[in-house]
Figure 1 (cartoon, one colour):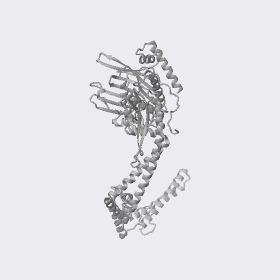
Figure 2: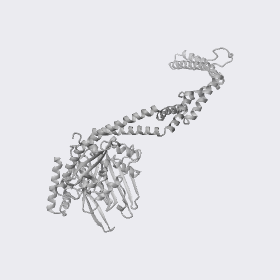
Figure 3: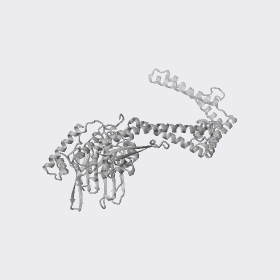
Figure 4: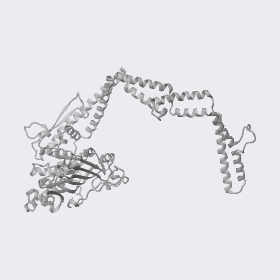
Length: 639
């Protein structure tokens, strides 16, 4: 199919620095540094905005990864800190050593249900993680909304604690947050696949989403057009139903709005008119006092230019300035000449002010009739303000109410013409929904066979050669939903002759994990979830099928950070980072303690030999282990 999703042919990234060094544990474990204080970095600022390398190696190509995980007091684990690298990380160890606690810790960290039974008696369990995210990750925005801040190195720190009584607390970027916030972020960050954690694959909505993704970008764009059309149709249908069902109430509400608009239109207030009327009223009321003040100022500036104020007036400012100017202008001193020019400018300014005062006095109106007119107009606008505007909004508030009322009248119109127009718009929107929905259904049906065939080919290499998967697509043309006309179900027939059944019912726990792995491999490079965790997806598998599982997990790790708990050496041989869980009796406390260490070189060969034969020092086992490592290296290079 032209629209199918394919794996990017990217070069495998180098192993994380420090591989081969033991993971820190017990008293030597160092807790991740707390988030930096407010003011040092803008909350939510993507690290690459400050330092291109701040998010860690490989972050530019990956949407995010978990670089560090600390687990305290959870199950058999006392206190360990794991350094997680890019690519494929495997966790191995003896049965009962506590391998699954790594998956439990990750699930708890990302908002999973807190089980107090996992907490040591009288203690408190805690999990902390450090996330390196790409600058455009939506996690930064959501974290900033919650008040979180990046750490000094630009990473985001998460923490979760659980008491033996079941009380749980979560922290994000140094801030206490509801557990739901962490769980919300986890939807775009982490996917856990285990024998007891298959809710994601069992949900029909998730199966439909997977099929839509497989159908390709053009199909997804068509689906988005359908969603928008569906929203428009439901809005129009709801509006029509509301108007018909509440015709009497809406008509009464419309009458109230029309009456208000008539009152406002009768007065016809203008923006800022109330303030202008206040100014005019004060001026008209105090006309005599204002005229006297203006005349006094004018005379002081330019004197009695009319000649009717007598001869005993003090010298005016213009004359005094002119005398001073002439006195300085007769000097040969450059400084005094400059000052004479300044005085000339002052004479011009004083004359201009005097002219404005004369105009003000001439325009000043003391007409009582005009004052009465202004007062009546102001009273009319004040009445509208009190009735229709919020306090302090004045005439502008009245005009805003009128504009909103006109818009609401359109929504309250229950006339026959309005209802007929709305009904026509609803029917047109419904027809568009039907047309787009049919196209979406056709795209899903076209993609279903190819998707099922690819997943089937992957299952053939995962010890499920006889299994067949298919999609059941049931379209309901009369009841279109927000995601289309279809109910989609992923079916599986475990063996020839078996009827296809919903995949979460037709597969065992181990089979269901492998079905999910096959689907994830088909989508490798396209899934937005950057961190994937698989808990013993190889249960019940051995031989060549085990090597195929390792090969597929390594392929998936090209574009994701993959953490796998496994008991098969054939899978562990494909790892970029190999962590071993050891348990030893703690005679002092009377409990079992668990340590986790990273192995490489000969230590890794010994661990693979233990997994193969039960004897770490077996020469035959070690030879087989080295052969597995060579086969895995060759397979990854050739892929």
